[in-house]
Image (cartoon, rainbow, N blue to C red; front, side, top):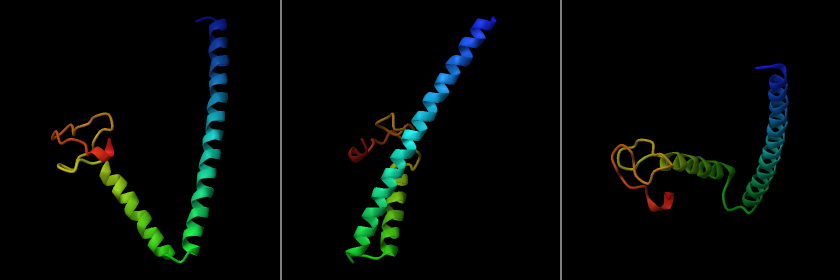
Length: 99
């Protein structure tokens, strides 16, 4: 590899790095917007008096647990690949709501 090849690789790596930084900035801005929307929705729901913050947090925890369980086979409990419609271990079909 000669000097010109090295110089081209460095220039290419630099431009890829700039693109990655821009992508990370865009993703961070997106997360910040989503966070703000979620916070406003939470405050609005709590202000309506339908339930307390503790109940909100309990529901949130249940949703997190359900999402984790949805990634596991209902028959054998092993993790199911999103690439397959059946469990790789026992052959159980993926539930239709997860397709």
